Image 1 (cartoon, one colour):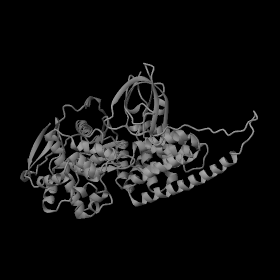
Image 2 (cartoon, rainbow, N blue to C red):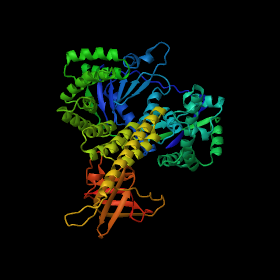
Image 3 (spheres, rainbow, N blue to C red):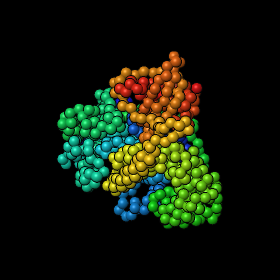
Image 4 (cartoon, rainbow, N blue to C red):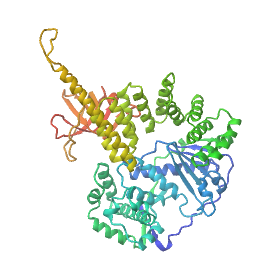
Length: 622
């Protein structure tokens, strides 16, 4: 990896793209993580799939702990000219005087669409796509990543050029540099605390300073790490992910903030900037694994109707779907999109019918099963209950990383007042997959209330209160806390009354008096091990696995030497898990999957002498 230099006065680069000749036939190219649909021919489709896989590899390489693939599929529609592109882009960009786009990114709970215009002839035509893809990669870190870093990395990554053998990242932003030279910088102690409620994020002028300065600081730190072979950005992320406050984390990772402020002010006034040039030789991308198939005009039209629906052009989408269904009444994609159109229009019964038909036509889209089941849950209990549960379990099978399916299945099980332990685990997986979603934590608290675990419910809601993104969500969480507190108090009073009545001596069959109390064991939290605590490893059989809320794991390890180790972790998701000769379930269910398994366990000594250690890593063995 070598730095590449750019001179500010010569920053304008002409990105010329030759016209793509090829058949009008649309083709679909599928790689491991992307679906590319294009009318520019198979060769171009393969090239685009390769480029997006390369972009993903860059993120996984640079930020392995913060980046991740979205649960929703990513579909790239690459139009070979402006006319075809305009037939799918949002209406707002078609108005006279609007900036012509080279790329557009649409992210919804259903799926992610990327639209590309392959004849765009200006610098970084896909900047908007790379910017939003960066946010998508860091969605899993939203609970702890500060806004300046999230936006700074997106601004940094948007000026990216992907070539056949290398990727050039972080080319300098001329507009940001000039803007910062003309305006006062935000103090870093303020910048690090900016959140979604801050005027620096919302007001136009302050917002411009915020974005520009976030880019400049990120650019400075990333390039400094590259030149000095340090990892200050990575250390900062690690401190944040472990709950440290942003300013304190910055002081630990970056040093004296006043010195950093001075460095930044000098940085924006320099005349030479560098970028990161990464060789693509190490990228594990095998184009021979890509699958290609031609699309019929009807198949593409059905896909285009779905794009129009997501782009807000519902009237055009509905007209196109009506034509498709007349020609092909069994078109599954058309049924799914009609379901989405009706759902967005508020016609829930009609939407459910469309999704039900899609399911009967053997849809392979997890959303068809999820939406059918979700909409059916509003109906009275009855024979349809099995179809609802089957639909949600099928949705999880088709996409085990889609958190709403777990959350909805948990709610369904709780509604029937059965399998509450499984409902609780479903809630845990939903929260693990999307820690930033307040609703999942609130639903989890509801299940815990059903289980009469009121203290745990309140604990979950206290965390939800911290995760809440706006005052409305905070108020909702606080209201639910009040409800739980009232129910807990009433339950405690009723239990106290019953205990008082039972405390009077009573004759048992043997003629003696006494009171029998049964206590159900629950795993308890142990104090966390220190970062520098001595580490050990042992091989043995895992037994007596117990799980508890919010994510406590405790088990015994029977070693070959005959010793029984008592081990735990308060946050089971933090355990590094691997397997040798075994295929693990997806997602892994520790309470059932670990029991009776042979494993190598790494653990740190705990200050709690009632246990042998805190689990760091588990390697399951055949």
